[in-house]
Image 1 (cartoon, rainbow, N blue to C red):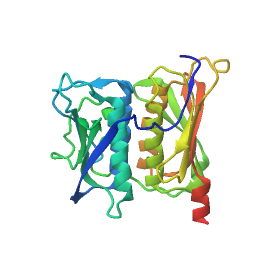
Image 2 (cartoon, rainbow, N blue to C red):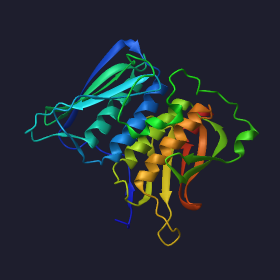
Image 3 (cartoon, rainbow, N blue to C red):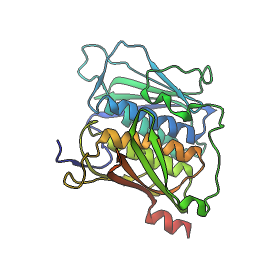
Length: 292
């Protein structure tokens, strides 16, 4: 409801488990997997955290950033546990967590999700069979960052020029914009991307129209803190919804990455010129100590 909610990173439901299969012969750049995962989680979440993905539907594939992500339900039609959005998101994040711990890095892989030992679905990460030709139902496909040739990735020097604010306008709703300011402190792009993915998974628990009072947490390595706060109903005409938080991350993070400006960032969500709320990605105390 409009009272809003405070969300932290989702926990696995009781009985949830995964099986991971890594194909180490096919390495894939971690950044690319984080970017496609960010878009996939946003699109799954749009359907609802508890949404059931029907069984006996062919696998669906998203191709972006030089990675193919496919998924489908493998539940039997009358099975007690069907494939839910929450299982897809948790399964993908567990898969990424396992690859983060490998010294060999990220690679082509499959994660199967189980409830009470019964398989419900799978997600596969692979190199695309036809680079750049991935057709998909995913709504975020229209982003300008979808080129697979790497041309969108331009490193930039984090100089004084970056203290100015920039604006990203939503091409699907020109009233909606993210205004952001990158602070001087660099961070590894993979740390920014992992924090953004964890923020996205946190926001995925809220319904599209539900008021986001606040959400916060760390990335998997606890090097980056993410925070988002919606303005109180008394202070703002429009309320910041979880759908807008997720859309804002889809607009902001690939743009920062594409510009090569991975650093601490503060941003606001605006609708029709009205500020709905604010967010940030900042190095944690742990990361600062390590850097000294």
